[in-house]
Image 1: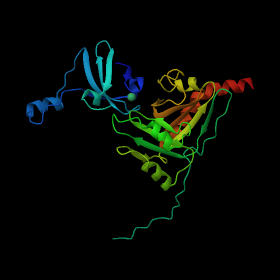
Image 2: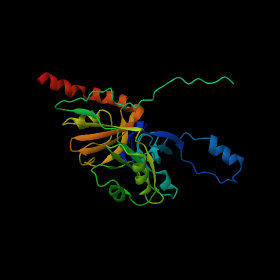
Image 3: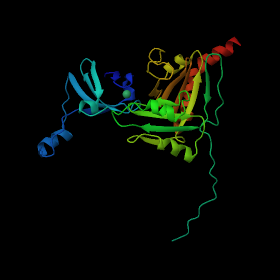
Image 4: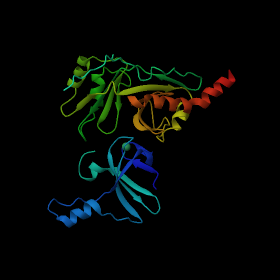
Length: 90
Length: 189
Ligand SMILES: [Zn+2]
């Protein structure tokens, strides 16, 4: 497991300060249909390799981040504010 | 419906760390700070840096304005504020910013001495080196398993601000973390 997360607001912090929400997926449109929503809400891949997840910096800045990590090598390749990734303001 | 009997019960205000004795030694000292005021200010996401304005609002007292994550600050002081005093500060905030009085919810502990970085480094992974964490810098981080807001107020002094119900627990952790330096000092005495 990746153990140091480079929070864009706080710097490198141990994973114990975070809560992992799970895969950062593209949200389907409201009219996407039951199958797409079933997939989005319940079904997850379990990839060996690159993975993008929502992490909450619970014991730090309390911002939601998108952390890119590799489940095989434990390398963390990036962490950005989740709002910034959606074109919002961090 | 039976009449409800409420027993006579006097509500008394009790300092969160009232039962703790300040710890003093050559290497490290720990003291509870006055339960003054703490106001949490939340600005607009991506909005302007409110720190200069907030410093004006707090009269320019040193370390009265502390960053608390993006677009968030704590206004901190030793004096307890009246409802009118809090209202005056909230009224001075710009439109789009909100303030919440946290004075009774957060408690401050001062820890200082030449060993202060070594003591705190036992509890947090935040980089405490003066270059990365200069005087005036603040961050929220885990100290042991308790999240606390940490501010360097002098070269060898930090303040920890913690949710009130965690204060005693954090105090005990800090005392344990400081133990080796206190004992060393006692040996030499
Ligand atoms: Zn953070």
